[in-house]
Image 1: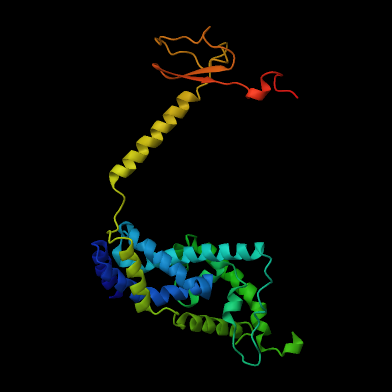
Image 2: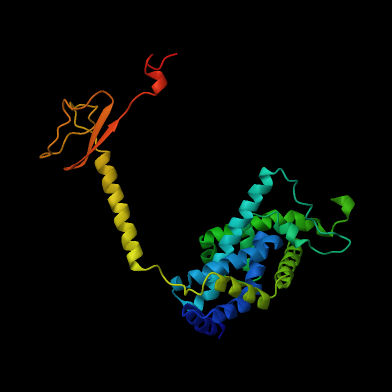
Length: 178
Length: 131
């Protein structure tokens, strides 16, 4: 149903109707921002998605299956977010910025500081975790978004979990026992 | 439940909560902003690149490569190294005996000679460049 609507809107947008493209933006904006936020962080997410949507408007003619607009955008946003996150990490390392804050949860509140935890992962690992948990995609679908194979997806997920495991296990312990 | 499963489940829950957090810019505002930027660029309909653009690019690249291959053609063994290349068969000019020191002649094709002359800087002429 949703894909059928996307197909109609994409065809109208290709014919030059900006209002049809606006409808596509309005429909998918939140989901794409959530994806970019998980990979590139809050500060970059909306900027990345807006850039990708403007590029998509220019390249709409190259989209072979109009019904696959969302998948096409997810691929674009995922890859742009990974690039942005890597570039940001490079800038931070060149600027000798201090390590991120301790991402371990605050035992008093019991909440998980998920953004700080994600910051400990490589951008692709963040993308895999988001697409697995939030979008509930299969490994091959995730691989298609990232341009890698399903085996690499599994490897990224395994490494992400191995990295986060010790930090998460500290969650329930009192501060003095860490 | 195993010890390692509960924290991972909490992480997954936190990831879903993060994803559910509404963006700072609402979808409607984002759509308006993007539409305005598209309109600002001119309401041109997105299209595939026209075939003639690819054709022109291919011709230019092919021509450039062909020219480079001709210019980069090394002279056969025994020919005058200063001349750079022999005159093609049938060309009216022969570099032999016509080039002074520091002059180079390259034939771009059978009718197109390219002369280049090299000289030391003005201040270096008197003493051969030494100090």
